[in-house]
Image 1 (spheres, rainbow, N blue to C red):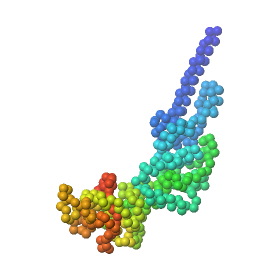
Image 2 (image 1 turned 90 degrees about the horizontal axis):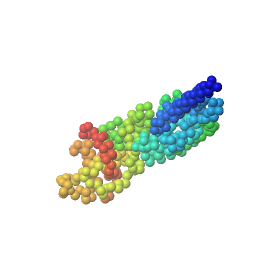
Image 3 (image 1 turned 45 degrees about the horizontal axis):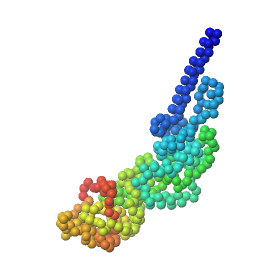
Image 4 (image 1 turned 135 degrees about the horizontal axis):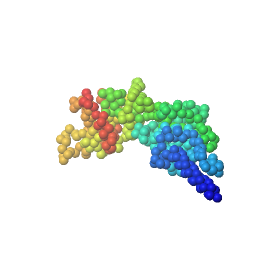
Length: 389
């Protein structure tokens, strides 16, 4: 009887020990599978690659009944609460979203959504992509006879090629869908050519030439200092710079290695060959910062040139006696040129301003008054080190 009691007590202790170890193993597995839950959803791309494909995890339990129950238990990212999963995907980079889109159909639908890509588009391209670029994109996709099927196996090679340009290390991994690990059969699906993801990839790979404006064109040529001209631009992800194509009358000019800080989206929706209709002439007063259209001849496109509103020659500049704001004539000054230069000053009519000028001095067009300090600071940053001749 005594030996029987000792045997039962030993079995109970052994059972508790096994249960404790099993619990620790399960907790350890959960920690390895779901680090985001314990690190405020900060999940890197490498973590996703390590757990992809999503395989069923098994733990050795102390009884045959628990083994059978755990055999049918599957742990995957798709089992996470909707809000948690959305938090994880929202923190991924564009390359991370591309990687996850190749895992299975469920992640493909989530990771190609406009909701996720809109944030990345705004963060990287928001300052250089304007309404004109969006219209150009619509024409670009309309010209494609057959939309590119990014997830189709037949087009998978081209998809990997595009993605590898924005994240070269991804090409080392296979994008072949693992349907058996996702629990369902991966279906072929087109990525809409008008989606934000498609637009982002086209910009990132340099496939899409978009319209924007370039400060101090042609590598800061003296003849274009403190100006901003329309151009078609293509991005080079290897150098993080742009190539520009300008379209002046006579010959096409190109420029390479243009940095981000020399670009902007067109501030007004006016074609470079059209006169901008000014809406702030009545408000102009000495000291205001402006941009004005100017072109060498009427066959050339306009560029935007920086200047300030000055005082009339009859005014001594005294604020207490200055009446320049109430005259019909507005004096514009371009102080990057010396006082003796014919380019230093020009006068326009406040009430009936149209294009004015001649073949010798060029033609002055519409005027924009600058209200934002950001725009004014940009022009001041570009100010030449010496007075132009």
